[in-house]
Amino acid sequence: MISKFLSGKQSGFTIIELLVIVVVIAI
Image (cartoon, rainbow, N blue to C red; front, side):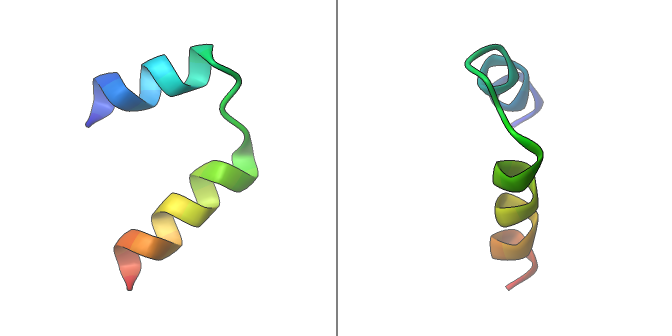
């Protein structure tokens, strides 16, 4: 999961995308 976040960050992961993922996980 962490490695996926790192690779996503390299692809231009935005704060909004991270927030959306956190919200989805929270639900």
